[in-house]
Length: 243
Image (cartoon, rainbow, N blue to C red; front, side, top):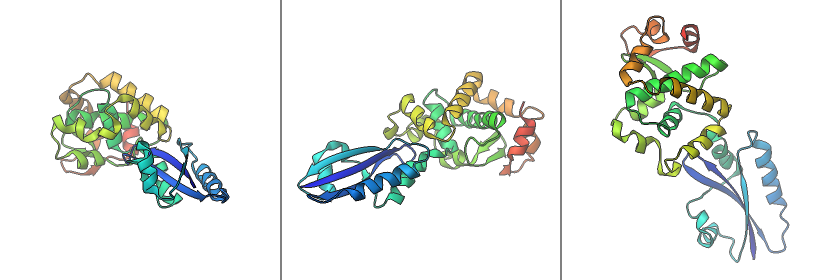
């Protein structure tokens, strides 16, 4: 008989559930399982939820764990604690795609409107905290500020495809799951609150009204835009121009 100690976590960014497994044979000590647990807890500085499952099986094989319990059928078993922790920590940082998906879980928006709302969320959070909402850059395009990752990942999408492309089946298309994803990020609760404030303030505006808003004299876009593409709008300029 073998005892399987299975530590599991969910990565919303990677769209999968992951595990690290320690197998202890009959009569053996479970010291290694305790060491793995201590290492995970010690490196999990943001207290991302990690669950422990214990299963007793006649086999030491991971495949037999999957066969014995449907929960583990689609779980990815990591090869090391380092790999497991990469998944655990993946949700700590946000991208503009994460913000766009969060917005879409609460309202419908085409690509142009969504791009402007993503920027306004970035501007609001930067003004309130002095920190970046996400780590990809902001650039001045013809129709206003553009977040780099959002532009590249959605440039070939039609408006009607955005929701299915950005909110995957793993996320179950529900605001509750997106709340969990956002709350897990660093300063996640503040980021959620700022995004909701922006949506309440600007969410009813049309795409063209939002473009006009970002084009007003004295805005960061109006100050930076010179008719070229990929003109970076630095945070210092956004802070100086934000009203």
